Amino acid sequence: MVGGGIRGKTLFAAAVFIASVLVLALKLLNPTPVQILVEGNTAITTQVPGLFTYADVLVIAVALVLMSVSGTYILLHDSTTPAAAAPASAGGRNPRRTSAAVGRGCQNA
Image 1: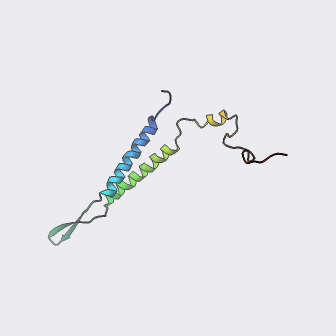
Image 2: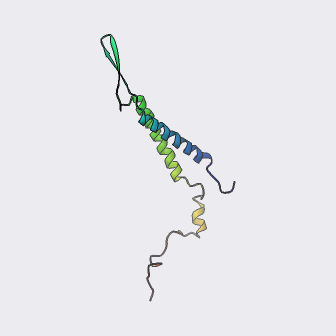
Image 3: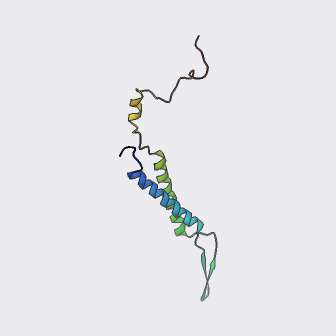
């Protein structure tokens, strides 16, 4: 396919990133709101907003790690230009480096 597109590992990384963002958003917006108090022979359940269980924290940590790894892969992976071909196409020189005098109004006498 000419022009490429998102394929293979990049598509997988994007899917993992989106899934991690959704899991993280759902866990942060909906913490576990139940607290169970046992007094003698009676059990009382109360709602406590804003607290997370250990399982919630584990899910949030795993989602953060997966989101970070997949996001880093997506940002740093360049599928259009192989790294080995870039210096060869410029004749062994770095095409981004220019002389300091070019374009600054310096004149040679």
